[in-house]
Image 1 (cartoon, rainbow, N blue to C red):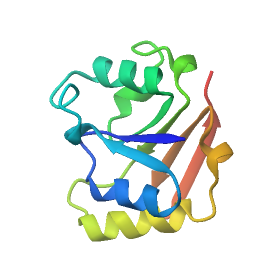
Image 2: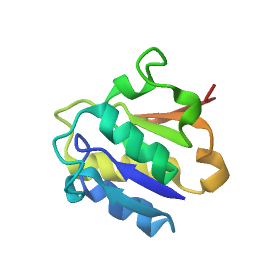
Image 3: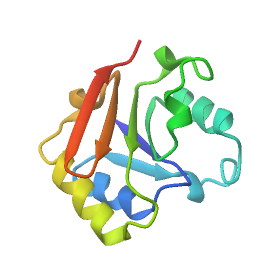
Amino acid sequence: MLFLIDENTTSSIRTLFEEKGFAAECVKDIHELRGQPDEVVFDYAVAKQAVIVTKDLGFANPIRFPLSQLIGLVVLRFPNEISVTILYKEVERLIEGMEEQDFRKRIIVIEPGSVRSRRLP
């Protein structure tokens, strides 16, 4: 399973997913995606069968995006002023023990101290 780390999220999250045994790419490192609208990132994720990892709630908007086409979506809901170290440690702690099937066809919202999950349409 591939995780696509959105531009608005620290690149170190990529390392975290890789350490958990998942493949991951960063939008920042993909020339044709860098600086592009969310629709381009969404289409890339659908084509690559990737789970989008983002801080952008817009990706969860079913009016804007056909969510049934996504493999999965992880939304990180943390204050902008949180340090990268704290964000990394919190996400690491909360995804500990999660496996591929836990992300498949789900929207997962990770917040300080909690994880919420629901099925994609």
